[in-house]
Image 1 (cartoon, rainbow, N blue to C red):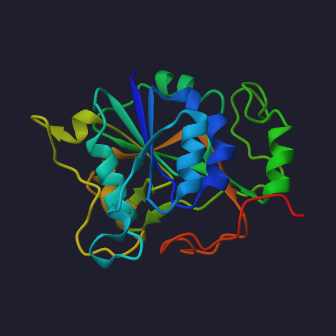
Image 2 (image 1 turned 90 degrees about the horizontal axis):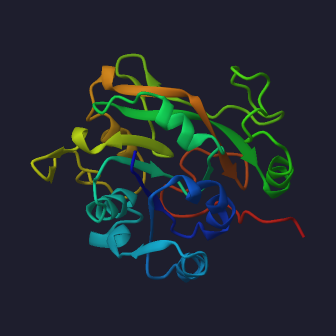
Length: 246
């Protein structure tokens, strides 16, 4: 299994510095995408040795924050050898993540999502890091999926007619479902969008319902600096910094 990943990090360096140690070991290649004005992310990538794409796509044609165009640009630069993951900068992966994928007998025709638990605030994150939850045998029992105490399950996107849709914090798919004779048939750049809303859903809806699947053996941590308000950062970063309270 060869796994490439794309992560948009525009004014999210305070999250990326925390999640990178939990994410980087699982990927054969990890491409971070940011904009020229976000020098903090660029400096962080330089310090950590992360590959960084700096693009003006997010503001092209007067857009407020066209996240999809940044993602699509990054996807153009991948090798497309095998599997690709679109992952948000505020997501931490368990230590068994790569092992779980390799054992899951993944269907190359599917797009996969997973569940997330919400880690709210820097202090809660520190307590979580000092726990053993992400270790191999840290859950309630060897074969049970449990959540850390006081960390609720994040919402799933599931329409009564369209069904389950893997949303943008975690979308895993194979080259064979996207490429035809070397050309990408499923793009991550819907027309007419001005911000980050809905484009992740529209991308996943290009797969029919039987091919949109949940990976129940993978549960990831979603860092939040404050109680989640739907769409708070869809037009660019507006949530407060993810840092210790002074």
